[in-house]
Amino acid sequence: MDAHESLKALRPKVSQRVYDVLVAAGLDVDPWHWKSNGQPEPDFARNQLYRSRWVFVDAAGEVLMSLWYDKMKVEGDEIIIRGNAREDQMMYRRMGEDHRKYQGEAKKQEMSKMRRGVQWASKAGLLDNAIRNCESARLDFSVAIVDRAQPHDDESENANARELDTVKWHVRSYTYEGDYVLVRGPRKTVDGVDVTVPQQVCEALDANIPIVPYEKALKSTSDLGTYEIGIEDQFVEEAPTAFFETSRVYPRDQAHRRAVLKRSAGFCEFCGAEGFLKSNGNLYLETHHIVPLSEEGLDNPRNMIALCPNDHRQAHYAARSEYLREAFLEYVTKMY
Image (cartoon, rainbow, N blue to C red; front, side):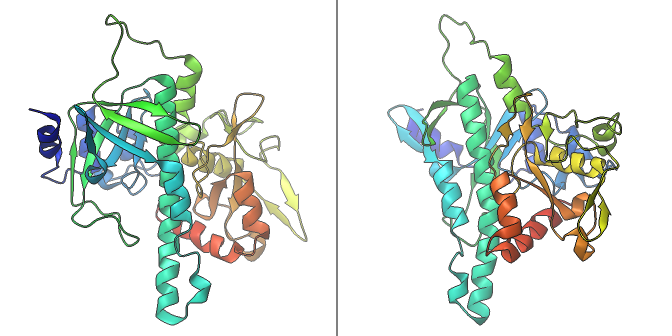
């Protein structure tokens, strides 16, 4: 079978659940069985926290990416995908940016488009990170091939069919600008010798590990000046019972901040950018109360989001801060 025939045969004919695809690929799905509060998730195969992701990385560092069938092309005797997830991310962030020019129903549609763009931009950022990490670590990865009846547009990313590719893929190249080439088939070895993956690269991939049960995440942290998850925020040096004064005094629970950082997996939950690396080896993000405590907002992960410093400053001072609050609330609501 030549490459063109192989590509035709790859078109998915059934719609496997994301959970089932991960199981078939051999990834650990234990986190799917838990809610973010540590309680068992009865409908684990449809866990809202995970099923809409484009990239999955388990505790062992195994990676699965969901890739569109209509992006796959034949070059020579290979099936490849060329793209730039960073450019996609910027495109998504521009969706609906002119909503202020519209009125009535048209404005509502543009605002809805903007909210979708925010979600897709975050997912594209995580995809970019996964591709870069796989290229750096020379790791092969599994692929869920996703098909759609209609070409991609601003209205939907829904899959009409989804199947696991039985053949692993690898990253042939990834440039500084974010251009990538993905190739179907495992990375070729020299004389059958596998490439050793540096430990620091494995640790970088660990930043994308899904959430573990809430109780496990909170153990032995009440008296620590660090969250011990490899991710820190602006309050990490504060005592767990610290109070922050404005015109009133508002308590903030370290356990909630830790849970939010764990949920973020080390990436800004708005733009998808990875937190920067501190001198102590931990990633840095900032936790933000979406509805401020001064406005009776709850000190609870359902009212909190992990942000990069730039997006956090915008949440407080940018002209679009009201839009950001709405986008943050919509994102967090879908997590629970």
